[in-house]
Amino acid sequence: MQSDNIKQTNNQEEVDLIRLFNYFKSGIKSFFRGIGRIIESFIYFIILIKTYWILVVSLILLGGIYGFYVNFNQVKPKNYQMIVKADPNSNLELYAFSSEINSGNTGVASQSKKLAGELGLVGMKVEPIEKTESVIDNYFETIEATSLRGDQTDTLYFKAFEINDHKKKMEKFDYSLQKLTFYINSDISPDSFQSKFLDYLNNLPNLKREQANKLAILKNYEYELKRNISNIDSLLASKAIANKQSNSTTSEQVLVNTASRGNVEADLLRYSEVYIRKLYGTQKMINNYQNSFNVISDARIVNETSIWDNNIVKYSIFGFLAGCIVVLLIRFNKYLGEFEKKKAI
Image 1 (tube, rainbow, N blue to C red):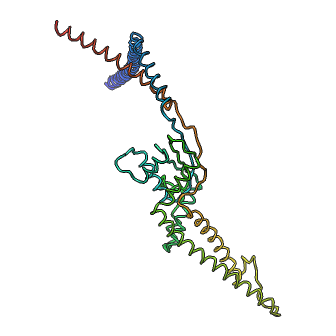
Image 2 (cartoon, rainbow, N blue to C red; image 1 turned 90 degrees about the vertical axis):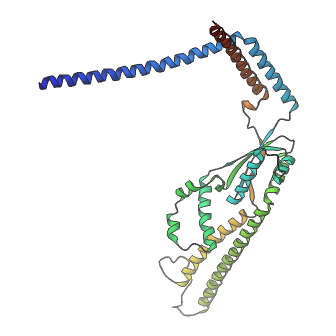
Image 3 (spheres, helix red, strand yellow; image 1 turned 135 degrees about the vertical axis):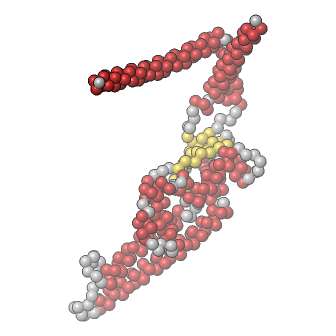
């Protein structure tokens, strides 16, 4: 009895395996059958094009002739490219300007639209340059700016504020370096275009106000750092003079490299070094904020063209597509005629 059950179980497993193989076999056959139908339909379409090749070729030639006419009567657009460096708020204004230019909205004649019309600017593209240096700069500028506001009260926050996590939270406008591509349909030179474009952006009222506020804060901080450095130098000089004038052999001396010895002079030197580093960082920030946008690479002509930018090729393709549509409509009309005859019978 037990052997019969075992045989029945084995037979059932064999049947299941056969069904599984048949399932895979049917699936593979269906897959190749589908590919065969696609190839057959494509060949049938080619035969249709061949049947009406005079019509298709005529429309392609017509499209090419029209593309040649457009090329002959249209000013060929030029592409200018430049790289600028700015803070996130200025970059937000840049992206807003780009969005307005690319929108094609002709309802309101804004200052951006007026400038675009004057420059012959028909479109632009803004792309962040995601350098590791930009991520690090943005990371430390966030901490330095918080420190300047007096909000750095809990250092645990900044210890947990890792650079990799910071990069994940950065938006495209947070990167200081931005690559700008302009599409121009006028004869304006790159130098003239760059001058007028930057003059407009750097003199926007909201950016000028923010720039003035930042510079005022940074220059005040710069003054305090310079005064602290000067006071430390005066203290060290006074101490050195006093020690020189003293005849006592037990008097303290100014020691420059005294990491292992605790005295006032060593502490003052360490503080002086800290202030000098902060002064360098502050002066660097002041230099960056002198203009809302600083040019890293001047505007120059670039060949950012594709095959689609060739009007002859583009309109020839349109002619071919139009020919295909006409052929399909002719075939569909014949099918309707045949269907009508069948129904009439």
